[in-house]
Length: 106
Length: 420
View 1 (cartoon, rainbow over the protein chains, first blue to last red):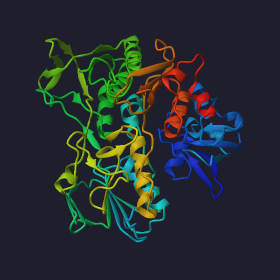
View 2 (view 1 turned 45 degrees about the horizontal axis):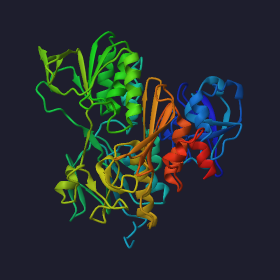
View 3 (view 1 turned 135 degrees about the horizontal axis):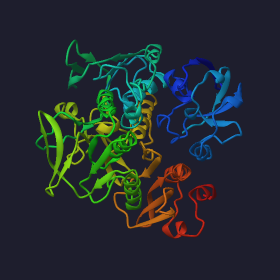
View 4 (view 1 turned 120 degrees about the horizontal axis):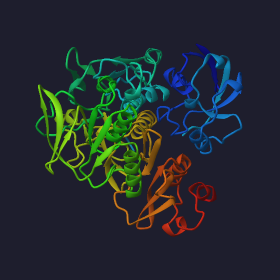
């Protein structure tokens, strides 16, 4: 299990995520506001946009071409630390990761 | 609009626990409803994502976990009562009761019909043979996955639409010999442009899949109760160890029909207005089961998609609680994922006179702009997600490119969007 923290303007939620479950799926399953994951995790809708703020950056999986393209089209403008949370499966190495949920997703 | 809004303590019953029903329950709470919310689920498990059923669930190497829409704890923390295994059998609009197959009826102040759609069957002999499958529910998908574990089988897929082709991609990826049988002259004929149909056909052919177009099924034949072949109208017999039928969906509108609500003779959907209201102010209908007026379709339309179900749920929940003068007007979009081919469409092209291809239609990365009277009505993208996202914004917003503009060398949707 890895602990991931999700930040919004108003909330701070820590979820224990099973290895292999994506940060998007864990957020949706736990009803964290602001992450929609409308396409079910296929890097097709860009409604699970997060900014990785702290933690083991180097353990993050690389950005695929599909994610790269979608990140250019997010509702909230892309930043250097932008990711689609559906493309980040939890691993023990990611324990302690902190992500901020983009304010606009749709 | 002068509709009464829901009172904070009103009791809402949602019939159907798919993407739309679950989003409705969630959005009602988000918008501040404090009264009871009852979600009636026909199925035994917790509500789940449907798109993976024809994709990753079939490919799973071990028995897959259900892809839940929300964790179990979500429903209790949001005080949403999920009544599993509880089909609604009758809607009594006079007494405001939903009668259930078993047990005490559920009273409501407002009822939301989110009954979805079911897989169309084929009225041909042999449809009930063993080895003839459909993929609609999680249990359908889990059962089909088990049948696909042993590789090297002859799998016939009847229907070259989204579901059929996703199953074909999964089955050929698992090492089966796949034949797709489609009645129309091209694949995905109701959904995408001919250029994309051709690309999808080449893609499947390159994976070793045989595709029979303009072919209708007259019977399934077998022995000892197990299917052995698909008989075509041409007289040809396609040998098959397993058949998957994916020939479209039918709106689950029976409850509404029996309750005297208007349903569309063409789409069989429950007719709602611009605000997703039925003729009864205490009854809304959303998602696959609803036929609604859409400016994107130039008339009434019924759509079967996650986006449509979820967006309509969000809209209807906000309208019920806060009131709304704005009609529902989200741009429809769709996607399909077939092995490493991603096809995304936005808008509806019921009629089109011209198309402009961005990129090369003989590659596996291009977009097709579809025009009706020089007005951009839809964009299909193959492995070009950025085009798709830009097209969604363009169709949602104001300015659209004309064919002449789109044909200019170097035209790109994203640049057009930014310049608009």
